[in-house]
Image (cartoon, rainbow, N blue to C red; front, side):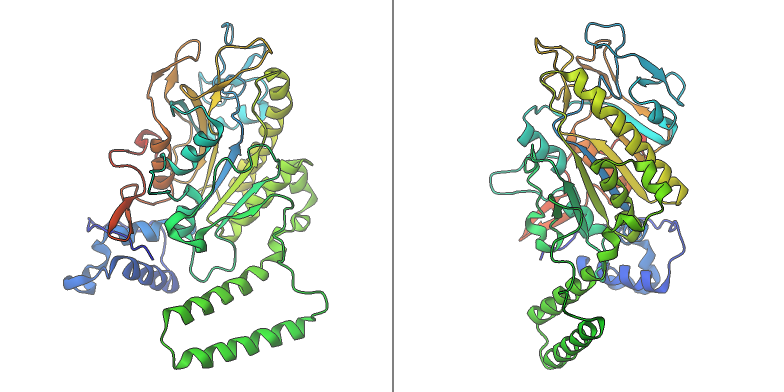
Amino acid sequence: MPTEKTKPGECQNAEHQISRRLFMNSLAVSMAGAGGLIGNAGSAHLFDQEQLNHQLKARGRSVILVWLAGGASQFETWDPKPGRATGGPFGTIPTTIPGLHVSELMPMMAKRMHQTCLIRSLNTKDSGHDTASVLMMRGRKDEPAMKYPDIGAILAKELARADSEVPDYVSFYSQTEGRHFSKLTPSFLGARFAPMQLTDQMTPPNLKRLGHLSDIDHHARAELQALLSRQFAHSRDSELVKSHASAYARVQGLMSSEKLFDIDREPVSIRERYGPTLFGKQMLLARRLAESGVPFVRVGRAWWDSHGQNFETHQEMVPELDRVLSALLDDLRQRGMLDHTLVVVMGEFGRTPEINAQLGRDHFSRAWSALMAGCGIQEGAIFGETDKDGKEVKEGEVGAGELFATMLHAVGIPHDKNYYFGPRPVPLVNYGIEPIRQVLS
C-alpha cells in the first residue's frame, strides 16, 4: 500500500471545532500514512504538523463534477463573442457580475454567476476525445510505466472515512457515446478507491438483500458472521484477515445505503426544481450523495460533440444545463452545503471558433472555459481572457494540471503532496505545477 509524504510546517488554526472522534480518526490516518507525526518532539507539538492540519481541514468535503462529455461550446455558454464571425447566432445577457455577459441560453445561471468562479483561459493542448478525457480527469498524461489515479480516486482516498457506510466515488454516465474515454482508475491506490460506475440505472446493482430474507434473518446472519469473524481474528494478527473483515464490513455498510439512491424520498418541490430529465435526476442524486458524505461524484452529460448542427444541439442542451446547474447551486446553498462542496463544470475541451460547412464546431483545446463554485473558491471571480474572436488565450493561460491542483487545494489537499509507488515518490500533480491561487478563497 502506498504511503504518504508529510512536511513539517507552521501551525494554523482549524476552521471548525474538532470532535474527539474526528481528532482521533485524523490522528490515526496521519500516523499510519506518515510513519507517525509526533516524532521526537512529543505530543505537545502535534498541531505544528502542516499535513495534519490539511487533513483536518478537508474532512467532510465533497466534489461534484459536472462532466460535459464530448466538449460543450464555450461560445454558446461561458465565453460568447457577439457580433464576431465566430460568435454564432445567439445573443448575450448580463450577469450578476458587473461587466460579465454569458450566452442568452443561460438566463438562470446569469442570475447566479456571483456565486461562481469562471475560468476562461484553458489551453490543454489535446483535442482527442479519449486522450483529452484522460488528461482532464488525471491532470496530466500517463507515462509508459505509470498510470496515474484520476481525481475521483485521489479525493476518495483523501476525504473518505475508513468506517464510511456510503460509496467513496460514484460516476453516472448513462449515454453510450464516450462512456469509457476517461478510463477512470484508482491505479496504484488500489480497488478500494475505484469508482462505482452507474451506466444503466441510478441504483447500484445487487445492493438489495435477497427478497426471501426478512429483517430478522438478515440481522441474525450479520451478527453470526461478525461473531465468527471476531473469533477467527482473535488469535490471528494478520493484515489479510483485517482486510477481509474490513471489506465485509464495507459491503454491509453499502447495503444500508440503499435508501440514499431513492430520489422519490425528496419532496416534490425539490424534484421539480431539477426537472424531469435523467440529467436532472442524477444531479439531485449527486446532491444526496454529497450530503451523505460521498467525497466525489461525477455526473456525465453527453453528447456535446457538435460537428454538425452545433447551434441546434446547444439550443437543446444548454437550457437543460442552465436549469439543472442552477437548481444544484440553490439546493447546496439552502442546505448550507456550498461551503464544503466544490462544484466543477467542464468537459474534455471546447469547440472551435470557426463554424464548419455543416454549421458545426469541431474540437478545440487552445482556448476554452470551465466553471467552479463552492468550498475554497472565490465567489464572483473571473480568471483569464481570450481574444476578441476566442481563438487564443489573451491573459492567464492555464492547463489541465493547474485546474487539477486548484481542485485539490480548494478542498484542503496540498497539491505538492506525494504518494509512493514502491520507492518512487509520485506527486499529486507534476512538479512545477501550481494551483490558480487568484481564484482560491
